[in-house]
Length: 241
Image (cartoon, rainbow, N blue to C red; front, side):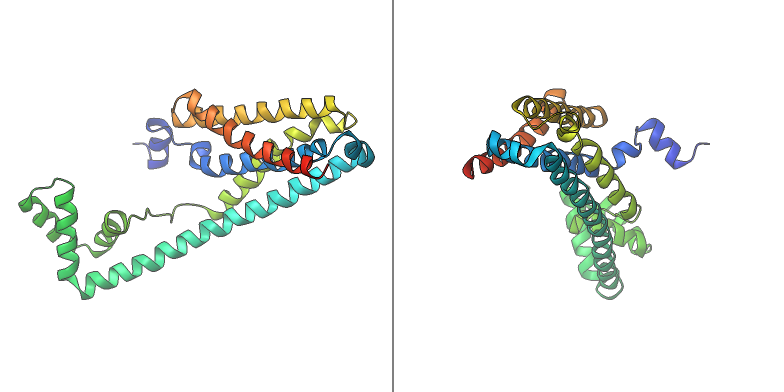
């Protein structure tokens, strides 16, 4: 008999990438946009500004931003996940307290929820009676269907933070690659733009691979969001040209 994790992986195709897809997409998109914003800002300021600071300075600003923001994003994802767990735990404790001390109200709420789900009156009463004898399960049920909170206790805040950091660095490095080997010319900027676009497409394709949504939607949304941010950054550079 296979264990639950094996079953989830084989039957429902829930792997590490899918498990941390939110962090990967969030970190990857932010990484591309953040570093491209540096490049686009210099390019928008005109050839003089880029030439004066030189390729080394573009890399310095870009890499400093890349790793500083990746660290901030990773720690932010860690704290966000921890906070989500803390809020869930505190709210569930209140729900358990209500189950033990105000069972009539909880019963009425449960019957209403089950009726909305299409459960017949007799079955709803029977299900509620069973849950009353199992307060822990009753609390989980109410958290899901009354309050609308999913249990995040199996989530790993540390892994969420690490996934965000790694995705940010890997995808965010793409716009800077030309500046390792080229001067900050129009050609370097155009190549950086192309690599940023390819990184956004790769990120969208990753979404498509693990979500089974349409390829057009996944890639289109990712490129659109990243493109808007890049245009804004370039516009700011133009404003100070």
